Length: 163
Image 1 (cartoon, helix red, strand yellow):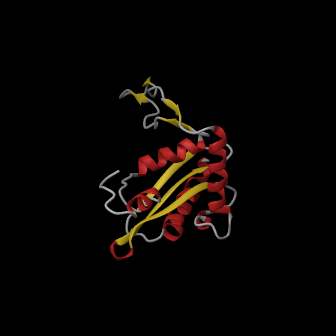
Image 2 (cartoon, rainbow, N blue to C red):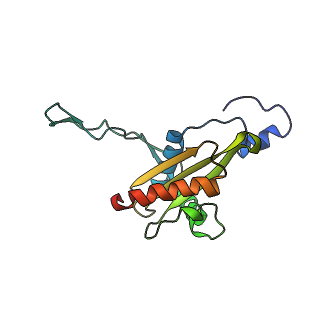
């Protein structure tokens, strides 16, 4: 968090993420991964294996740390809500739908209209056996329900064969 709550409305703006917070795409992806792992936060895996100059595998990834952040029941409630963001015709993520792929998503829009809006997306797929958790922060792209959902849709269309 950054800054101070300077007036009586500050805590309310803070609570819904309108001010005083900074986040990056890796943090958002880790949050999506925690929900996908039914409440367990894991250390991101950035390295699958290390190879020698000859192409031989010389070591695997470091061990992944794991910490339970939420109960499995709470995570399941979050998952159902995140699925509704995509499946409900009035959901802010319905434009991200990819045929044949179940998706759980949270959208968010940050910034001020005059300065340009940032679209934030955190998501994972497929819902029952997650293989990917990801996040998008699109600066000056507009509301997440349009720009962010379209970016997520295009990304998942390309990733679908791997999922």
